[in-house]
Length: 208
Image (cartoon, rainbow, N blue to C red; front, side, top):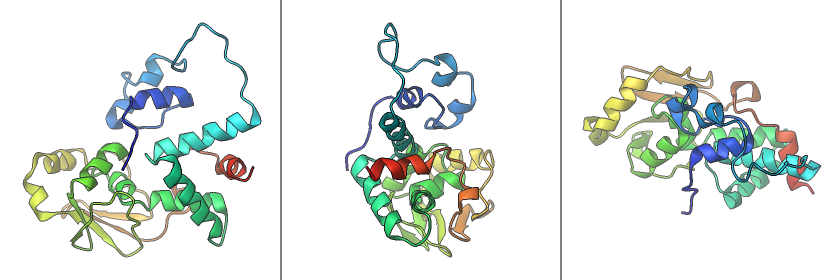
């Protein structure tokens, strides 16, 4: 499947804020947003004020890039969210948060979503003791996410064990640090999600 392979920090600079795509680096002075506040590209020209459509597009891009999802897939999530009961924007974030790669990231097994996606693709994780190598797999309440037994002997498991606990685990997830497994206690709610996007603008963008 196609994916963005360019510089992650360029996306943060384009959004004008941190999207936390580089893990620990985003919390240090080495972060590109801290070092260079201006957006990428030609800085000699004065940048025009964004239109209403441009503001909506930027918010949609920010959400899409934060979760590492391409446009067609993101639009699919939106269409699904619109058909679900409740608020479309909240449903959209709930679907994105329920992705396996995001759950792995939220549990603290990986330092960034991009790293979590790569490790899931390589088959290092199980859901209810069955290997799942699809990053977009939707984890449901009651399911348990853990490491594949053969992966526990590799260096990446040691790395994950070292960095475990550096970020707080959301309330909708539960983590057993000793067994290195986590489970989904319930579906995430808006108050559980710290991804700073205005879903109202995203809904307006796709409703044009």
